[in-house]
Length: 293
Image (tube, rainbow, N blue to C red; front, side, top):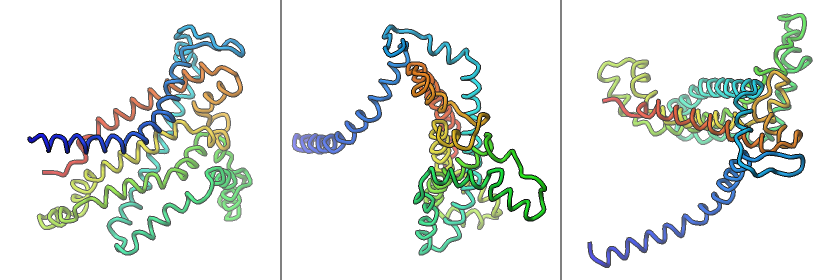
């Protein structure tokens, strides 16, 4: 390689670094620095209005040994898992229909309609579900009006089920879009070749469509699972005592109990568990996105 080519490559590399540096600095300042601050804070102790900066693992020991934190973390993982399963199972048929059965000139309209829920406030959608699932809400009133039930159902609101329903509706668009993108990338000639070779429609779906759509499914799973663990607004509004999650305890530690180090330790523990689960999902599904040979 000549000196001129080497100089040109270095110049292009430098231009790339210059272009990347502003968002990189922005990310470091607004994401990495707060995470490091939370991590450092988790090893301190709160003494009324002051911090004892002596290094200690007492917060983590309490997070592991206190049963209330384990219960909240287990419930959070269960709710996040159920929300993820419900949204992916319901979103895949919609994404498949838009990708394979909607004419090309109307797909943009369907995607537009899928994003309509983003137009309304998240809190407004939560309150609407509260009205729907309430003791005298739309669902109970409708069932009573049809004569299906005599008394309002009490298990619809203020429990983990209400949290799952509300969060599944809120995160549905986040699930549909990545699956749709993955389905759009599938080469239709592979499906035609499979049918020409005698494969059934269901067999072609299982052997070609589903494996090639797996990257979108994995992306949708992570996009939903990770933020649901940190949601504290929905459990507070529709969950009741049996629907509270670990994020509600973190909020309580920071804002009500004035124990920021304990809240930070819980936050770091939750992030560690979620990161481990996310890596496990990626590791298990890393080979599913390859076309069959």
